[in-house]
Length: 162
Image 1 (cartoon, rainbow, N blue to C red):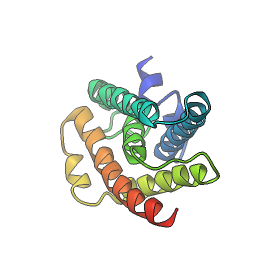
Image 2: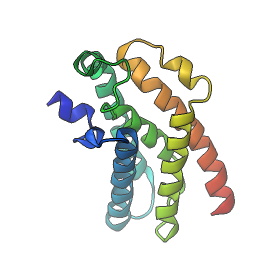
Image 3: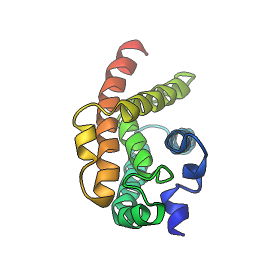
């Protein structure tokens, strides 16, 4: 069960790019949730953003609590199959972005996904330093910082260009 959770339903077991797979699955879930939200309760985005926050908090809580187990199980400090950190980072990236009910919705999600992956891979300061935190905190915090950078960039780009 723990392996299923830390791999986000098996996404982290995708060979070659587990972080990208976990990020992509999260972006897809958020897009589907937005589509469902706008058809069920159009209007205030509060419920939709509450969903993103709940998903982010759930992923972050699980990442911190299962981090030590995952490090021991996979034998690495930041195990590749462990993608709960990507789930939290993508959620943070998407938080507060202007999603509309038209063709731009998909572009917003794709831009956010790409921005998060770039910052997660490049790890600008202090991302790399945050990896040194113990256990699950070290696995998680660099991705949340990448999510902050990606969110700021997306807020700027999406609000100016779309």
